[in-house]
Image 1 (tube, rainbow, N blue to C red):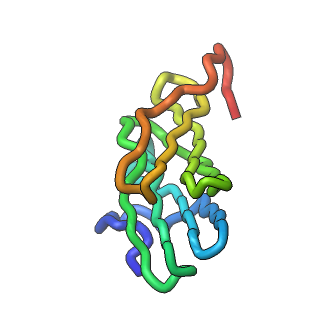
Image 2 (image 1 turned 90 degrees about the vertical axis):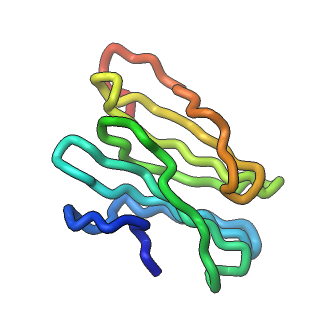
Amino acid sequence: MDVAGTNSEFTAPYGIHVSSLGEKTLLTWQLRQSEAVCYTYYRTSEDGGATWTGKRLTWTAGLSTGPKTAVDSWGGLNVVWCDATPGNSEIYYRKSLDDGLTWTVVDRLTWSSGESW
């Protein structure tokens, strides 16, 4: 499986996080594109990991790191992560109710003058 979903040679995926509910599984990870740019990716499986779909989840110009996942009791896919694009690390959230086909707009959860982890 091509975990990265990209041809980047910069580094291997890291920050991997997995959550599941029944046969539904959500996998997220981060992949550094350069010294200053890191994106968050995801894959979903509806059959216990036999097949996977997914792609890139973040598109910012900075570091999107530390993704954490949850599959809620209604089958919704939930992802939070830190992003340093605004100049310091803040926490962001997205949700999908259709197995990752579409996602909510990015919701910034913190507004700190310092780092939010």
